[in-house]
Image 1 (cartoon, rainbow, N blue to C red):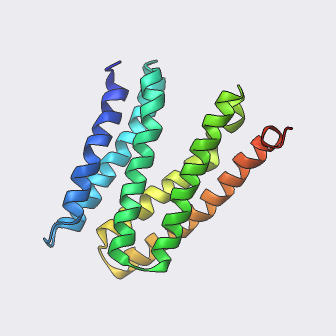
Image 2 (cartoon, rainbow, N blue to C red; image 1 turned 90 degrees about the horizontal axis):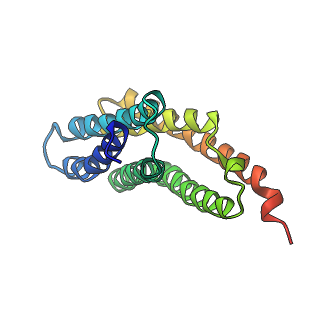
Length: 181
């Protein structure tokens, strides 16, 4: 159970409270440090899946924990950012992204109970959504300059659009099962 990919996933979970504490510190370097911690967590997200496949170290524990770590990490960051920016321009995309994660998690669980889990497997659109989302969150945390913030907002809205599109894609794939009598 304790292989390299699962250790990276567990490390990502460990980084979440560290990220939050640093984000709220009243120091000039706190946003950069919090962005770095979030970036490091994002890198572990990329590495754990790659290494699990490459080293043939996929486990049921990892398959369970990886999406949990991803969702908690992103939700924690989006809630912190919504609190920090206190703007509908941040809060609405954050709510859409968090809601989508809940809907798709519930859909995947339900589809697994129906024996149709493969109908709602991760798609390439989800990978693009994740990349845009992570870059947007890192930029919005760091807040290096106005240009970075605007670019990050743009990426956040791209991620939100991809979030809604991928949710629609998953719901369409599952629709015949959802509407059975």
